[in-house]
Amino acid sequence: MLEDWRKEQSTKMLTETAANSQVRTKMFLDIPTAAEMAGFSIRHFRRIIEEDRIPIVQIGRKFFILGRDFSNWESSKKVKRPA
Image 1 (spheres, one colour):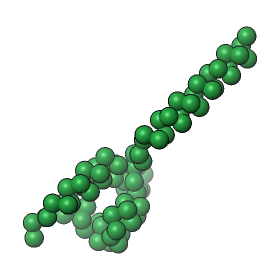
Image 2 (tube, helix red, strand yellow; image 1 turned 120 degrees about the vertical axis):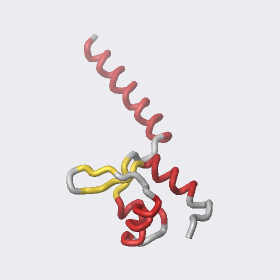
Image 3 (cartoon, one colour; image 1 turned 180 degrees about the vertical axis):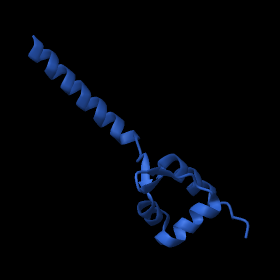
Image 4 (cartoon, helix red, strand yellow; image 1 turned 180 degrees about the horizontal axis):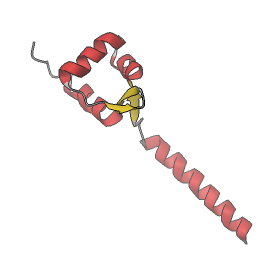
């Protein structure tokens, strides 16, 4: 009886994980990955982060951009920035 319950729970967890993984995007992007996704060098993208005030999060010694903030910035960059 206990083994049946465990099998049922593990199957349930696997299907929930598979269903959720298709919808989810990366939560944290490190700066080099975000720069590559945006099509800029790391150095230039750091300048963009500063100029456009993209929020960053520091975890330990590394800096990350939330996936949500990156998406928001990416959609707003289609609008021309003031010079």
